[in-house]
Image (cartoon, rainbow, N blue to C red; front, side, top):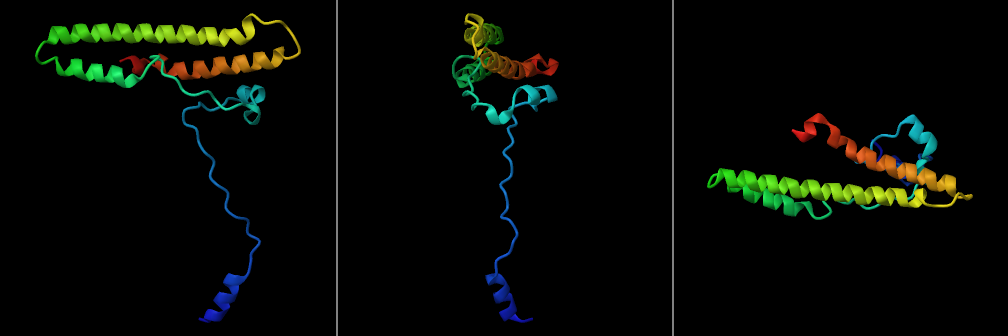
Length: 147
């Protein structure tokens, strides 16, 4: 084995292109369907908005309350279940209010505006926003999600 030949080869440049980075996969976004690709070209899309909780607040507070009432079951089962019922009522109310607010936000850009040359783009963006919300809500409709 001739080390000099190896050293000469290491000093030579090659025409091999540098490796490209792997694509970043977004597991939170459902795969685009053919119709989505035709209407919504990803390169022209703005960055998605920040994620917001359906609870309208930090979910960790709800989980802390849940763990607390769950631990109290041993001492007073009836009170623990009553607290669970109250917590569920608060969560459902918060989710309903958050969804109603989000619906008003979705309607605002297109519902009460004049027809002009930018209407098609506004409508396309509105449809995209509705699609994003619907895709986020669909897992809640799964029969296993509510059991």
